[in-house]
Image (tube, rainbow, N blue to C red; front, side, top):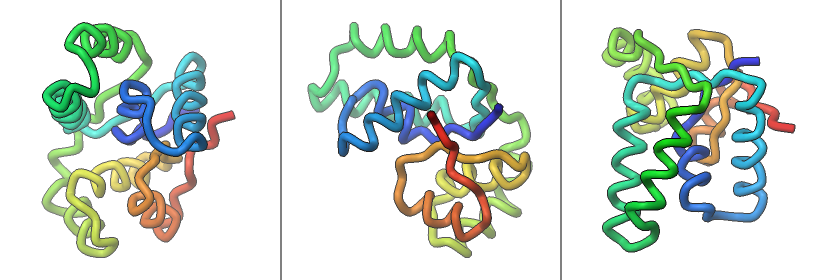
Length: 141
């Protein structure tokens, strides 16, 4: 089964931080990627790179650790949506307005709605907006 992967889940794999329930969910999503495909908006890699760079600058992770993490990401079944930009100033902007999300977070919601996919996220505001919009949370078992 395919699902939309929010950056909050992937960054939990690197930082292993947050509530125990969130870390557990993130690890289950990672395990699900062995049998599933994740779809991400085109900004996903830039968002990930930003978190990695900030985590390194704060001394939370080493450059060696992030190199290994990036190598793992590259091997995962993650497909980048090619239509993210085409929807940015239309439906994505409308979703950001409607649910008071950043345009970045709204891009995950827009993709989930457009492709009819569940969303794997640890972001409380995005999860709340997704629920209101009728998008299910990815059930990582």
